[in-house]
Image (tube, rainbow, N blue to C red; front, side, top):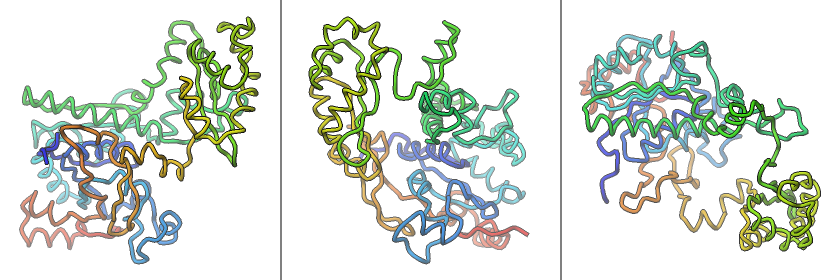
Amino acid sequence: MPALPLEGIRVVDLTVVWAGPFAAALLGDLGAEVIRVESLQRLDTITRTATDAKAMHELVADVDPDAKPWNVSTNFTTVGRNTKSVTMDLRREEALEAFYKLISVSDVFIENNSPSTVEKLKVDYPRLVAHNPRLIMMSMSAFGATGPYRDYRAYGANIEAVVGYLLLRGYADGEEFVNSVGGFSDACGGATAAMAVLAALHHRHGTGEGQYIDMAQSEGVAQTLSQAMMDYSMNGRSRRSTGNRDAERVPQGAYRCAGDDYWVALSCGTEEEFRALCVLIGHAEHVDDPLFAKELRLAQHDLLDQEITEWTSQRDSYEAFHLLQSAGIAAAPVLDQAQLANDPHLRAREDWISLTHPAAGTHAYLKTPIWHMSETPLPYRRVAPLLGQDNDYVYREVLGFSDEQYQRFVELGHIGTDYVTRS
C-alpha cells in the first residue's frame, strides 16, 4: 500500500464537540498520527456524549452491557476514527510538562477552545512555540482570538445565529426563531481548519517555519452566505428566509411524493429545464404562456407548486427523482437515515464500511469523504479509541517515560480509563 499523504505527521488534538474532532479526523484520514488529549477529571458530556448507562442504551442499541457510556458515543465513534487517546490533567504542573514534551515531538496542535481557556491552561502559542519552533498551531475558536467576542463560548447554533445564517433558514411564513440545529457550521469549520493545516504544512515544508493559525468558525460559515451578504453590500437589501424557494431559480422546492412522508427536491434554473419540467408534468401550455415568462414566473410559484405536487404525489420519490433527472432537471429524493443507509448510489460507491468497535459493537460507518483517491486510497485504519486507550503508547513510547514515572502518573490520577472527580 502506498504511503499516506500525512504519514509521519503527528497531531496533538485538544478539541471538543464536533468541529474540532472532525478537523482532526480528516487529518487522521490522510495518515497523520492524531493523539487526542483528554482529562479524567473533566467529564466530556458533549464530545463523548453519554454520561450514564441509561443514556448510553437509549443512544446505542445492542452494546455491551458492561461498556462504559463514554466509550460508545454516537458522535465520537464517528469523528474519533483514526485517533489515539491519552489522558492527562493539564490543570496540574506535572501533566503540563508532559504535554509540552508531547508538543516538542509533534508537528501540529489543534484546539477549539476560547482564547481565555487556552491561556488559562498555558497551552497558548507563545508558550508552545518555545518548546517547538516548527509547530503549527490551529486555533479554531467560535469567534477568533481578537475582537470583542473573542472569549464568548458558542456551539454551532450560536455561531450560525451571529453570522445571520439562521434568519435565512426556515420557512417564510414561520417564526424566525423556530429553526433546526444541524451542525452546519461544525462541518464548515472542521473542513476549513483541516485545509488550513495542510497549507501550513506545505509552507513549513518549503521554509522550515511553523505558524499560528487564528481561524474563527463564524468566519468560515459566513463564506456560505456570499449571495446574501453581497446583496446587502451592493444593493442595501437584508434578506430573510424564503423557505425552499429562490429568487432566480423558479420553480424550486421539496414536493410530496406517494407514501408516508416521502419527498423529492427539484430546482429549475434555465429555460430548457423549465420547458422540460412543464412537458414532464403535463403542463406544456406554460411554455409559451406570457404569464410564465422568466421575469414573471416567481409570481406563479404557488400555482406551479400545486401542479408539481399533483404529479409527484402519484409517484415514489425515487421514481420522480429518476424521471426528473432523465428530463435534465436537477432533482433528488429527500432521504431519511434509513433510506440513506440503503441508498444504491452510496452502496455502489462503497461509501459504507462495517466495523467492530470494542465497546459499541459492529455497525456501518461512513468512510472519509476524501477516500476516493486513485493513487493514495485512504483506509479506515482505526475505530474511535476508548478513553485512555493509548496511555501506555504515548507515555512510554512517544514520551519515553520509565516504569516508575508512568506509575507515578497513574497514582496522581492522570492515567486511567474512567472519569473521576479530582479531590
